[in-house]
Amino acid sequence: MESYPERCAELHNALLQKAIENDPSAVTETTLITRLLEAAPQLSGIPGLRDLPAYRFLSLLKTARSRPQQGPGLLTPQMYQPDPFLFWSGTFSVGVILNLRTCRAIWHWEPGPFPDDEQWVSLEIVLRNALAKWDSGKYYWDVTLGSICVRAWTQTDLSEALAARERLLCGIEARLPESVHKSQRLEPLEISQEMMSAFRVSRFVGEFLSRAPRPGFTFVAPGITTFSTEALQSTHASKDPASFRRSTLLGQEDPDDLEWASLLLPTNKSVDQDTSRHANSDIQSFDKPWGLGKFTVSRQAGLYVIPEVTESDTVQLITSSGLTTAGEFRGRCPWGKSRPPTLAEIFGHWASLVESGTWAVAADGVAEDHNWFDRHAMDAKLDWHDHLI
Image 1 (spheres, rainbow, N blue to C red):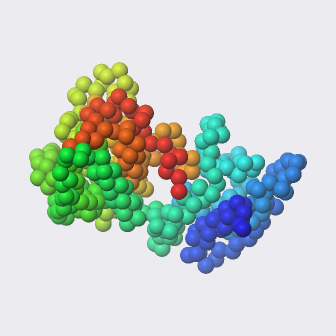
Image 2 (cartoon, rainbow, N blue to C red; image 1 turned 90 degrees about the vertical axis):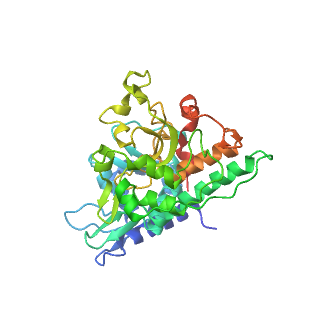
Image 3 (cartoon, one colour; image 1 turned 180 degrees about the vertical axis):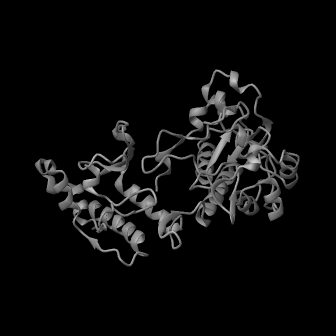
């Protein structure tokens, strides 16, 4: 049976193969453990070093030979191949750290302290997460740039979001009162390219809404509902075309895939006007230059897709109080750069709140009022460890 070190080494080497398969000059070698002991000879004094799983893992790793005057090559757009001399040179600042004794890993940046032991994750998780992004097409080789790049979103991202939403809707439908007639799903919205352009709806959101059957009940989360075609038009049609949201492209600014902050799931409430006076600092920041108020559709509360540079499916929950942290992850990501949740992740979390009974369900769907997010802001947050591959 394959052991843990061999399994992790196989995953790493598969990552390396993905990274170099378009580079005909790449030459691989299995010298990492030798270079590690040259860079840090003090490690030779660790009792039973050669018996540690991490030693076995490192001894099996392949790396691509560095070109003269160049550092290590990339494994992913965010991770270089392991290089002991770079790590001990003092120039290291951020990356995946491996605990040689436990074979657990964490994404870490200097000069911050290492997190508590329970925050570290299996190295296998880190490697599988990166390999999954290659397999889905999230990571790819750009022939023009001659480099590894990131796609803002893929069909896998869209499929996972639709599947997680289906899980949420099915969970709510299963808990509807027996006396309630189970209404059939409504057809997805019909959104033309002209409508998307006029309303500044991102392509990812347009693709999602045009493929997602709508529920027969009203509320999919506390105070949060879905758009009808009429509601989508009335919400966007009369808005100022010069507003920050409508005039500011986000994401990668791909001319074939323009991305704006987009309201996906609305509420029937707008954000309070006096957020700057609120005692909660997270709410005070709503209308600040660094706040999210400028990305809203006329201060409409709800779930927004607000693209990041490398992620077009990341979301922000904005409540009517102006709270923007209730839909975030707790703490930092163990296996990569921290980011907002994806649409699939937030739907998955909401589904778990329905399935566990945390959210009550009545004839109109989720029965909790919209203020639930403010009263239970920590429960509303996501845990990175619930979204491990």
